[in-house]
Image 1: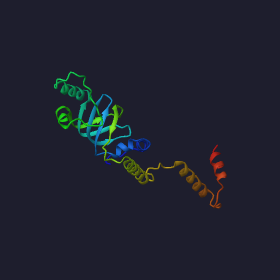
Image 2: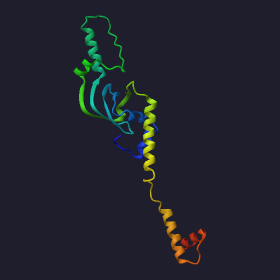
Image 3: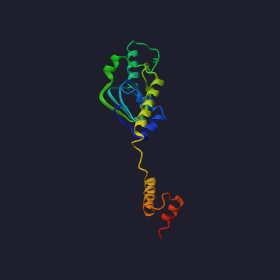
Length: 187
């Protein structure tokens, strides 16, 4: 993973299936968009809002595919109603894709525009999720000690205690209740 996420993004990703999508980065993925278009490309990144970046993507419309299939059937001079068996989990023929799909080197898709993710069959979903969650756990264990905020309250309390001990060198041990009363009685 090249991109580093904030703790908020990691928390959101671990509570949803977005961690599955983040684990299939650098795989070829098919996405169906809400406007009946399809995108096939190499997944480069996914954030916690399901915004995706693709490289070498191909985009095509379901409507164009249907029209071309209907026109191909009309060329056979078949007067019967054409029934098209659409299998959206199956890609169009490679010749059709080369001819009709738009090719893009880079593509960004906003997460709320995505209807479905079609993952490659060779991917084991459970293993991918466990791998990604392990990556997040490992990252959080490394950085949790470093990113703790400074505790000013305990620092001030220790500072006042040391100042009080300097004023009263006779008493090695000072009662905390007396310390709180003396600190609070500054009138």
